[in-house]
Length: 260
Image 1 (spheres, rainbow, N blue to C red):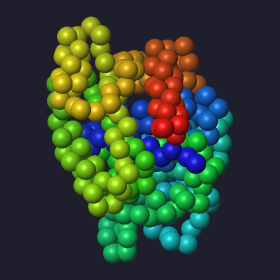
Image 2: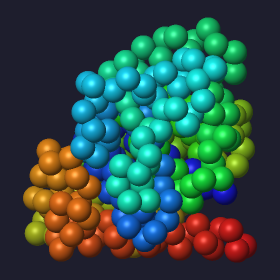
Image 3: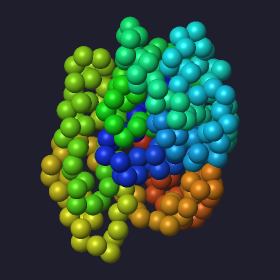
């Protein structure tokens, strides 16, 4: 059965979508079947995989608002080896309002995923940078949450609120939800600030923190404009090596979880 991981942080610009794209691609690179779900109306994950979000006929929006639409019809199969994608575009923004009148609206994604969860080893959900109904749907469906944190001065801003929100979802919607871990992004080894942020967060959080730290990397920044994950665009770059290591950590965590 697939492990469902939400990538979430309501603070923008922390490398959330970069992490969702490249973690999904690097897990798939290890011959694990992966479904990447774009739950962000900006559709940046979709574009990052080389899909023209403006030409899509069926997206995550249709899946959420049409109770009779099977999830299989929304998935783009094998866009990359071992990697399928449920794409998104700006239409999804309307779902926040349309879902307000739907009964059990928090469980829509979770219920839809039940039909395909056996087909994938991992399901990676890119959440929007907000704590609205789309993020709630993702977290209600998820087994765990990975929180990317940028190595900058305001790194802890909003983190307390995110942890509080996850706590609320655990209490009322998904008691099995766990914080899988925190991953540091945009690390610059040349600055004392990056090191200080890492130490501050470690002191502040009683959470799993991944050993892998994602560096600032030009190739990582370039890859989305080419519609390729980093392991295809620049497989020898430090960005690719870092996400390959993070993928190994996530896979190992999953195996330990299932064995225990």
